[in-house]
Length: 106
Image 1 (cartoon, rainbow, N blue to C red):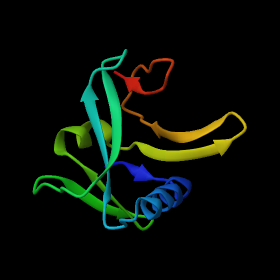
Image 2 (cartoon, one colour; image 1 turned 90 degrees about the horizontal axis):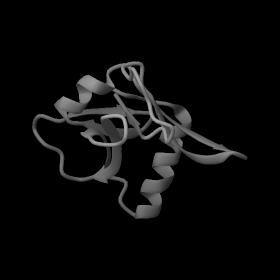
Image 3 (spheres, helix red, strand yellow; image 1 turned 180 degrees about the vertical axis):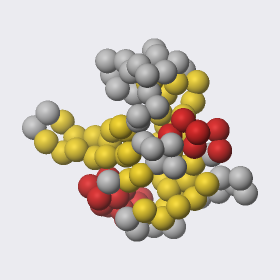
């Protein structure tokens, strides 16, 4: 299952509050596509399936489907806010190769 850093959890909470629905979960998924074979997808979701893996990390509900969970095992979701830009990043030890945009891997 993917871990969530404190800075990412804080930003997700902030975004959920701005959405006006703190009951939503952050869904993290891996989908076929991107320039390296797989791409990451993140969105707020209220539709949690029976086979989804759901954990509470840093006060944030995180949901991952079983197929994505295998590819995200040991990965960490982080959030950086600095002079070079702000955004979420997934550090995935399972990725053998990543593309220049940082959004896809193989």
